[in-house]
Amino acid sequence: MINTNRLTSHKRTLKNGAIITTATACLVLVTAVGASGKPAEVESKPTRQEILTLLRQMSSSSKEFQCNKEIMRKESNYNPSAKNGSHYGLYQGRSPYLATATIKEQIQWFNRYIQSRYDGDSCKALAHHVKHNWF
Image (cartoon, rainbow, N blue to C red):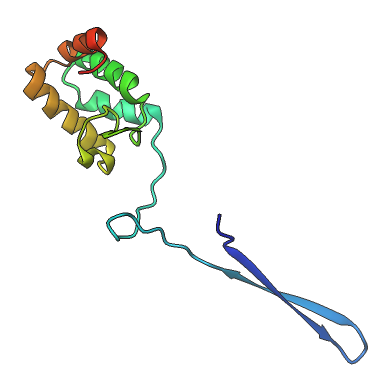
């Protein structure tokens, strides 16, 4: 941990013998730099409810939402920063892109994956996941 506050104190003796202590505070600003060499963005971790609200908005039906939600729960427990070996994100896809993708981009990636592998039916993907523990 970096100590970001530095306090410098100065003592001064007056003619009458009184001692005055003054303090000057200095704040050191630290900028994080990501692996790309660019400054890292400061972003709060989204709540589970925020993630599910976005997922609901991006789902074509309540049935699809429920299946997507269950896969997300099983794969990452709603953690967009989840990593397991070479798998990343909410759906634990094997794409390094997912390591830095936003929540919306991760959901879009998942929808494209489901479209190409399961004809767009996330409930088929969930059934496969239940049977084989992967989708």
